[in-house]
Every structure is written in C-alpha cells, then in structure tokens.
Amino acid sequence: MRFEDGSDLSYEIMNDMVESYFPELQGCRIKIIFDLKKRMSGGRLILGSISKPNEMMRFFTIPETGSQEGYDYIIRLDKRAWNLMEEADHPRLIRHELRHTNVDLDSDSNPYKTRGHTIEDFYSEIRLNEDDERWAERIAMATLASYDQG
Image (cartoon, rainbow, N blue to C red; front, side):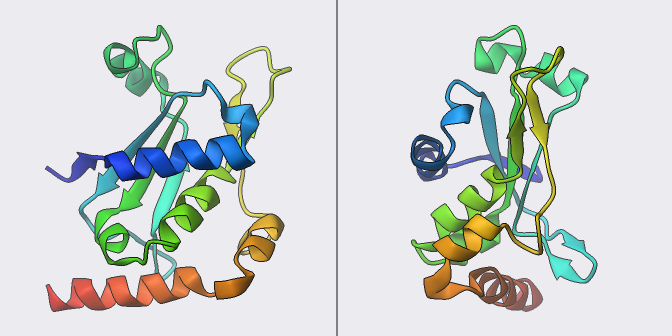
C-alpha cells in the first residue's frame, strides 16, 4: 500500500497549529496521510501538500468522519521526510500546508478552498522561520539522499 494514516503526533501538531494560527479551521475535518512514494515536481521533492477531496472521496470518507460531508481537506506528507526531519520541523511543515487553506464563509457552496503561495513561501512563514529559513531545502536534501540510498 502506498499510503498510511497520519501518526498521532501529526494530528497533535495539526491541532496545535489550528488552535494557534488558524482559528477559522476549528471544526474543519482534515485527514493526514503519509505517502510512502517519492513525489517530485519541477525537479524538487514534494515534502507535503494539501488538497480538497473531490466529491467521490468525500463520499467515501463519510463513515470515517461521522459527518454527511466527509473530509474538507487532505494533507499528504512524505513519510520518509517526516521520519528524517528534526522535531522542530514537523510544525513548520504542517503549518506551511495549512497556509494553503482559504476559508470563505460567504461562499454559497463549500467554504473550504485552497490557495497557492504568495511567493515561494508565505510572507508570514518567513517571519516564523527566521531561525532556519532554508528548513525545507535542508529536509529535501536529506530525504533525497535517503531515497537514493534505497
């Protein structure tokens, strides 16, 4: 199987990030999965991503969520990167993915949307990561080396 459920730690961190930085996501149903396969885009390793599940995926996740709507977002994390990164990097990665959310409560349909970067990162993340501005590059390099070793 290519995917695994996110760990208890990943959910604890996500809940802390929602409470501290994303109050608009309180009550939002977010699934975390670990991807066991390397994903690349534009020559770069993808450490994580967030997406809105399509209608069929939402349907299939109704029993798990206990909601008639299923999950609102799915966070997909590279498991090898997660296991290699330092403890301080886990919140950085999850917080970064949550920055891609955009809650539009005035929307007539589903209020949960996604957005791209304001720059290569997010302005607010640059400030929060001043102690290690190149954290993602550091993790990607270590993870790619690990994939190369098998």
